[in-house]
Length: 59
Image 1 (cartoon, one colour):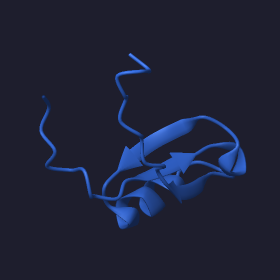
Image 2 (spheres, one colour; image 1 turned 30 degrees about the vertical axis):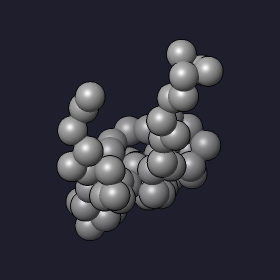
Image 3 (tube, rainbow, N blue to C red; image 1 turned 45 degrees about the vertical axis):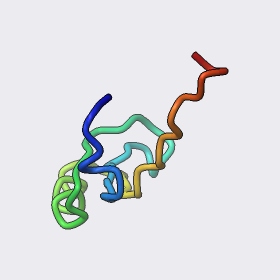
Image 4 (cartoon, rainbow, N blue to C red; image 1 turned 180 degrees about the horizontal axis):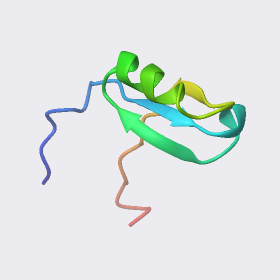
């Protein structure tokens, strides 16, 4: 089983095309994500959605 050290930590993504494009960068620091987003025209910073753990039925 993997480590759960970051299970409750928010992650921030820089997403291209105003939030509808691909993910350009991911960070645990919102300030860093905002700084990186300034490098990309029309990019947006948003919180990374939580991934649901796989259940036995899905595996």
